[in-house]
Length: 428
Ligand code: SF4
Image 1 (cartoon, rainbow, N blue to C red):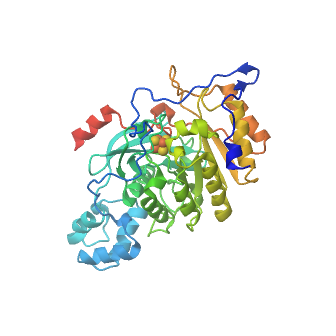
Image 2 (spheres, rainbow, N blue to C red):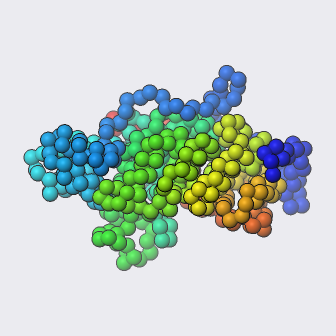
Image 3 (cartoon, helix red, strand yellow):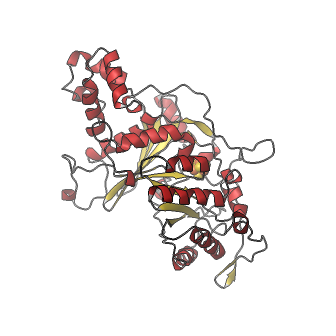
């Protein structure tokens, strides 16, 4: 199917659910004004505004650079390995726990190599304690969040990669404040280290049997999966995000020793960066947040679509599969009467099938229900119909859990409230 065929769905196409007429709700902001450029299009911000850089941290450096930095601080190079072990294996930045380092220089060494990056402002947990949202304050007062979730057999951390976001999606609270700045590699990694520390201390609930949990030894629990679906568009902060991924997969003690397959890098469709990611030699899981199969709707729903169209993003996603052999995920937030029409399920299936079989699966995610808003979850029967149509067309499709929604921690919900700003300011 050519790109022009793909985009040729007529505006007048009847929009019908099984047996009943369906309306078409169009995206618009509610409760905020979307930033626009001189031509009235949503403002896209790719470059990070100039702000003071966060302090350089061990996790910003390669192993060789760590050795150099430790020598600059007047200690032998092998101390870098010891510090890395404390940080990446024991998840500590506390000099008091580093008894293998010379007592006289410990504080100075830690201050120079492991400066504080994230101050915890607030923590929200679900009743079972199996989902925890952290609000962090960065060195310059910017606020970011991460969400830790226990699932059967895995622990997932949703991390932020930017403070704010420049992609300006009208449904997303994060996008409304614009891009404050890119996060550093170490700021991204520190979210994981802090989550691992909490898990090691037994702070993540949701295990039915205490005996199933190990907090010490090689089998101890820790974050197994990372999703870059917190604040920010990860591919707009490409270098730091990829450096962070390299540290995640590097063997301990040089890094966190995670499996690349457990790391999901998502994007709203920055095509040149998807191509670059395909050429990296790290087989992460790649997710394209599509949310609409037709350009007419996607132009409004995901403003970056005005730069790279649905067809181009899908072509780049298919190339990712061709180069890495890793099946691509298509994320699709199901929004009532906006993008959940049966014909859209069929159109999505046909666009995916036109690019071959077996390369993709679709994860529809019911949007958080917001009664009275245009941005609300599709009805259950509509969700089921959407999933059934894709599956019937041979596209593996699984309705995704919206864990975290009870604490506003689901994707597109991560934004600091004015109350958070006050709490953070009080700590500054
Ligand atoms: S949905 Fe993602 S890309 Fe869009 S504004 Fe929100 S954080 Fe940015």
